[in-house]
Image (cartoon, rainbow, N blue to C red; front, side):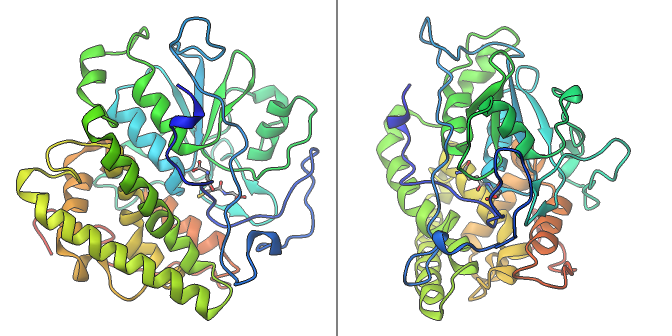
Length: 372
Ligand SMILES: N[C@@H](CCC(=O)N[C@@H](CS)C(=O)NCC(=O)O)C(=O)O
């Protein structure tokens, strides 16, 4: 598989930009919103992910699928990283690919850091569906003697002395064999996990094959949905929240809410045939949309000012779809940790929320299956 199969129209970007680091990981003056991230209209422009290798089952491939060779570094808070956690679980790869979760707080100067031994892990106290999320939050288990305390330290190791000019983002798919980063682009990691691990030791091939997130017969529709949803919804909420002018905000809001209307209409028309975006077939569109929608009412409505409507009151079909995934599918609900999610956005993004106060509502963060 090559990078050309990726349908992402452009780079996926961050939570919020942190200051750039040099190769030695020293803090520089923090400009949380550097001018180069914006165009002349004050609209956010996401930079591209820099590590774009592929795990491939083609014989002789540099990164071949193997049990225990790869490790995911993620944040429960980050929607892009959340995609990879969902797919790892959906495909039954828990014993094959390890995971380490960073602390939910992202410093605007020093990026993400690993949780120290004995430190609060940010357990999801609402916890009903977060049962699987209170694991693997801790120090980097692979580089205990190499002084890896923060995400940039990992990028430094991967660069082996070379200069890295991208952003220090999660998710990171790490290769233990070459001690480097295979990929830091979630849309591509998602595809690799979905397609390349069927014949690997420790993988239940029947279960693996029972979920195909990019089935041939739906590829065109998936590609089309990905293209507009990425720009207007997944990245759209960030474009609203980080807009530097009223006009840029208005444009992003208009595109976001007209897209939610479109999704609502689509889901109303398919919901009788199944719980997923394409009725009875679970695809990567569900994965990619879920990570944004589950954060919408608890976080984006508030911190990103996406407040024309809430999902729970304004979009009944989307809400039903969301509740179904959260409550009925372990890979979705079980990887959703609201403590990390709310802590990250409201306490890290002090440029948008200077007090760092975390809103208590909405209550509950995700509505019960049979409640409205
Ligand atoms: N293109 C990346 C974007 C990932 C990303 O932007 N992650 C954010 C967290 S939500 C991050 O780590 N940001 C740190 C930064 O930009 O400094 C992907 O989809 O994998």
